[in-house]
Length: 153
Image 1 (cartoon, helix red, strand yellow):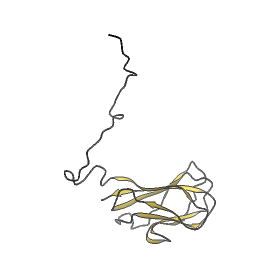
Image 2 (cartoon, rainbow, N blue to C red):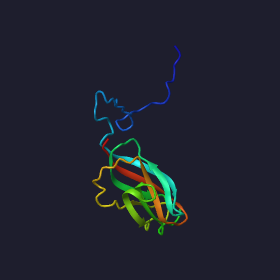
Image 3 (tube, rainbow, N blue to C red):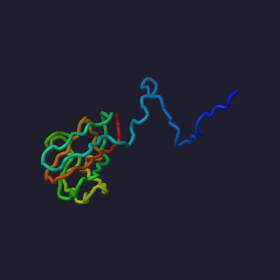
Image 4 (cartoon, one colour):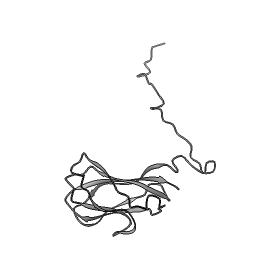
């Protein structure tokens, strides 16, 4: 019988092996990923050059959540004079999650900064399915925005 080369050797460790857990609400009322601290929404290349609503971020697979952190980074230019806020409704309506504030530390693409969450919203359960990024003072450029929190749904 001819010798057959099975291909390159494969090594699996606990860190490289995919583990899949079945998610069925019939058997498990608290499926994998529920009640977890995770990324709830994000927006890439949000323009901050003009004032008004700059982006709408859809909530990712959650109907009830608590925001714990909002981060901005990957600025395309020095955006230190741009002001932005994250709100539960368009045109700075709904729940204000991050008040308008300057992006003072975002002086280039290699910087990431956390925004201050409005006091009281760290414990407020939210259910809006979209978050709105509002720019109150613009400067030419773009920024990436990420929202993390606990998924309570």
